[in-house]
Amino acid sequence: MKTKLTLEMEATLYAYCREAGAFAVEEVTMPDDAGIVDTLSYQEMPDQQIEWRCYELKVTKSDFHSKAKLSFVGHYNYFVLPLKLYQDVQAEIPPRIGVLIYRPFDAEMLATATEAPTTPGYLTVARPPRHQELQVPESALTTRFIASQAREVGKAKQMATGLKQYSTERLYQELKKRHQHYDIYDPEANFYDQFIDDTQSTAVTALQAEIDALNLERHDLQEQLKERRP
Image 1 (cartoon, rainbow, N blue to C red):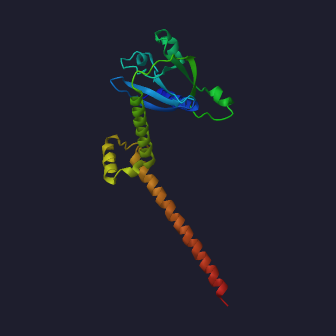
Image 2: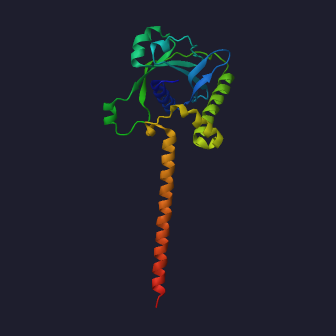
């Protein structure tokens, strides 16, 4: 499960890549046991050369020292770190690896902003990366990049479809799974009770609208009858 800080860093990095004219996608599996790139970006340069950049996001020391493989397989490769973590581990970062520092927007910055920010924070370059040859075939990078984009599109379509993609039976089964969490002393904490209240409220509102419409129609008919009387 990703932490709130990790999600904030992902969102900020995605916007950072897009602003630079690159396309980015998260969690791209590499071939030949080369691990999983946290964020991979693809950019076509003015000379029509393709530039690949890999970003590894770390939020804690234990995360930084994890035994998980670092997939620095691109032309340029970065760690994306909070400032405090960078200060603690900067001596351990190889010279060829660049570093982006994540800083969240604080209340003072938000108060003076002329426009609402579209990301939770911003990135600054603490150290630029050095160019290297691709560590995996470019065709493999392209294939996996497209596959990861397709995965994200699939997720977005599922979110857009919402509950309509599930049968009534499936929804009922999911509700039954949650019965052990039912709190008779706190109805507001129970989604089922909330659903029933919302449904009843919607039904009452709909009936009231019908009554209002009928009353208006009756009033119009009465006025028409008055006009026809000699």
